[in-house]
Image (cartoon, rainbow, N blue to C red; front, side):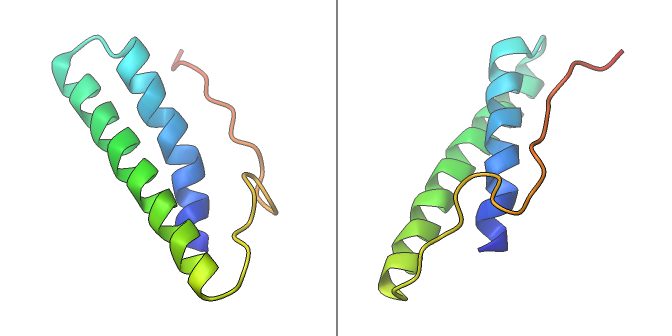
Length: 71
C-alpha cells in the first residue's frame, strides 16, 4: 500500500505540471504522472479488494503535501 501512498502526491504534482507547465516537456511529464498514477491507484485498489483489505485513504498516516511554486 506504500505504492498507493506515493501516487497520492505524485498525481497532484502531475496535474499541476499539466496546468502550469510552461514547456511541452513539463506538460508531457505531468501527463505521464497523471496517467500512470491513476492506473496504478486503480490497480492497487483492485489488489486490495482481492486480498480482502482496505487501502489507506489519502494522507492516512502521511503528512499532507502542500504544493507551492518554486521561489
